[in-house]
Length: 437
Ligand SMILES: Cc1ncc(COP(=O)(O)O)c(C=O)c1O
Image 1 (cartoon, rainbow, N blue to C red):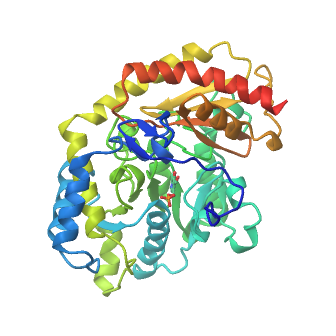
Image 2 (image 1 turned 90 degrees about the vertical axis):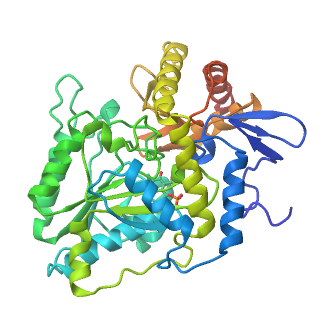
């Protein structure tokens, strides 16, 4: 097709259909989707009951403005409140994807302070090595150098805290002598900016595509939450990639017992069957807007009936098949197998992750952690090599963590498929290193 892909010459792959954890090509070959698309397909591909639920919802109502109450909308809200969200996150706005949900959360944080009589609070603090979306506001609050490149003049210059990137600690700490200076740095940043000017801190509980499954030390999130509380700053947890079971708990913040003021999700909520994201906030966040009668503007396609029906069906499958527990178990098995397969690999610096959100960081020199040159695009080469060997991985990484291969297969992945991944990845890395010269 002459008009596809959008940027002429960029890579593409013909797909005839997808089922379970497999992508089927028109020529009869099949590829294991070890990335669940873009870490999305949590319940796997091709579930007939989800397609049927979407069809039924569209027969009832093809489109309704977001504030109207349809059966599939109300049922989804009820399901989210009863079985998924921490009880404190009782206010729900449904949108069409991850970037929209983060953008809406930033807007909500600002509107909260304005309505509460604190119009001087407007700054959004993000972190280096983070990704929150591709709109201008979400790129601005994110710290993904490759995706921001060239757009900087259009991006608000918001303050950034250092990440918990222990492999190359930006603060020079070692794992043995780490007292979480990086989380204290968030507090110092708030103090430097002036707490009375800061609206929110946004962070991914497990950093996704900017650093490839970077898991924080256990105390990080409880301390981050305490810092935000101390300074009257809202805490936004971006769980677009880590939410809805991906890390082996409903949400990644559940691992540390933290309830943020605002949580955003996307991807796994509808498992890729329809575009959907969500903003989940406490009563306290919405109360000042309600008191003043302020609106919170919706997006036209927010809470679309097809997406609500898809998400409801996905959540029910996750529960019925106990797939969140399965993500925890399969994730541990995949992590162990990858660690064993790559333990001696000269170009693997670290194999990391939580549940089924995993990353393998590649370096030129394992002894010094010297990365490959950016121009080598090593993670992308591994993805190409993996496809040639029948497995799809997801290229990730930014800044100093520039080459990470991400894995995020459907929670239904079986033991034989895990073995295939552990066999193919070392070979794909070798192919890529050879091709990079
Ligand atoms: C943590 C995080 N936030 C936001 C986004 C943006 O989501 P979307 O691509 O659905 O707009 C992503 C996408 O990868 C993400 O991983």
